[in-house]
Length: 112
Length: 115
Image (cartoon, rainbow over all chains, first blue to last red; front, side, top):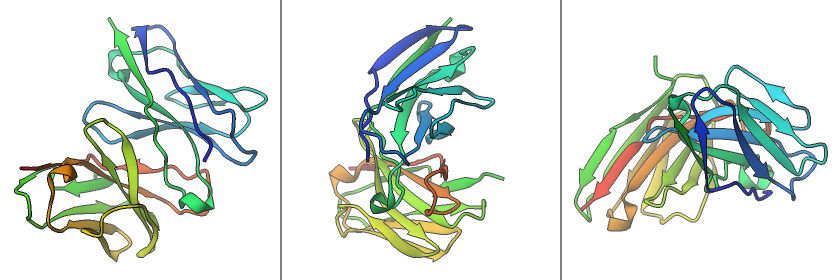
């Protein structure tokens, strides 16, 4: 699996956009980038995923660079309930049985 | 109408005991997983079952034995509990394993404390 690198922590003011970066320079051509988050004491929650193109859903937007070596998750209007640990994951191949390999993630704190 | 449910939510037990954690999903998914989140908050895969068949078995002590009576259930049985087994255990499910685009849905977790 391609390794991902994320900042340990970030702050964001409520109502502003939260931009969470992720580096995945060894990603292979057919691997997807997934984002999950874990709100304190809860199970991880799927946010969004993408391969090459930018993606948007009701929760967030995902911007993937053209060379696919990095991506940014954007929460357009962060709320206090978005405070969580955000995980950038490159989806494993057949050998990993498609398990999700969670790293340390980015701890996002949304402040009033 | 919870999608992935786990019981119990909390489990406190003595070293050496045997315990089970149950997981059920009502999403009609083919694949189920067990993850362990330790005190340092690292979340790691333990097992994966597809249609009642084991497909992932990470380096987990054989005191841990998953059991899948049907594809909607994946239970985790732990023998001879040790202090280091204290963690939060998450069950998850996904539609199938053949696609890299499949998302996983997680249960609320079972907090195990071994005294």
